Length: 169
Length: 274
Image 1 (cartoon, rainbow over the protein chains, first blue to last red):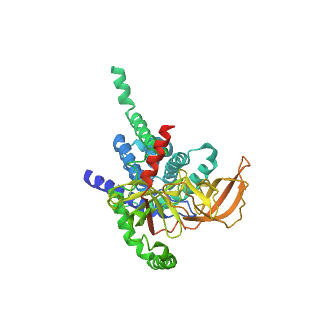
Image 2 (image 1 turned 60 degrees about the horizontal axis):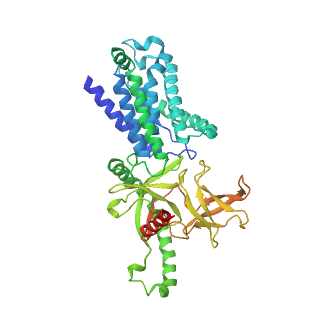
Image 3 (image 1 turned 90 degrees about the vertical axis):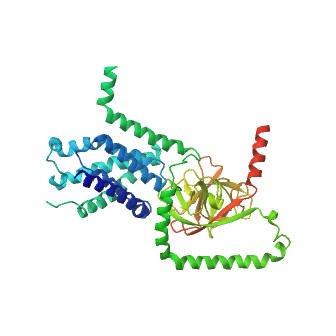
């Protein structure tokens, strides 16, 4: 049981990094929209796991994407931020429910899953583009990129999560 | 002491978060200054091999177009060769007379949608590539080598906030700096610091200047798309449309200036004596 979760996580990690750097970094929709779908890793990661490992794992995930896409350590900073904030976001979205043993992401409503994903993406993209552009005089550009890229990430993430959801009960 | 330990245990996740965030911020801001993104770049072994693998597959789709470009360039070079054969006959076997060496390479990863764009090529230290060599294509200028590993190197594209290249208007000696300020449009770069007394026309060709020890003079860059005076009203702010389609780059040439070391040494000595 532990092993299968472990292998699933590792497999997800590798596949999402490859998918991000080989496919989505080359999308350049409208010239600049490259959805950051590797965030799905944080969406799918088991809830009951140790937080410390989770944060470190997310840092490494971000760093890998950074190394491939030559973005210094911006992805790492943004990913580690949502990794830290994930429990807070979950408590906000799912209420106290999520702390129960029986809670599963699949059992929650579609609206809750959507909000959870959207919040993760909003926080991640605002940190990411603030660090990338890094000037307040361009705050409109930061906002524009956060919104447009965020929407594309959201759409693709929903597609992927419905495509690969584990409904085997 | 007990309280400190309790504090550490209670906030261990938060402290870990702060620590990791700090690390990534340090990496990020260190690299904002020139040439310090030493180990966070795609010229390393793992990403290089993966990009080579993917490039091996995708390069098949553009073979015909790439061939046409190479034939076209061969034709141009042929014409040049036939017309200059008399001049160069004297020193054709004399390698001391050569100032620039050219190494060919292929792009294995290209980005143009970020604020600082980098291109990864499949040539590295093994092929005697070093930092600060110029990279061009058959159509024009592309960027400057930033990091190298054994088999790969990353090139800082001209589409980068950090990029600053000496450029001039063709057939004149008015030079300025080529920068990328409007970081949205990846086919247009800006030429600044050209004095307002210089006569300009839309469509004029911009080429590299002679002030740089990286690029040879007169490598094409682009044509003037539009121009306006800047805030100080004494210099032009010129939009230059690139000859290169930055979204579609295959074969590149890396230029090695054989005199660069000497030039830099001389300049350093002059400054030291100042």
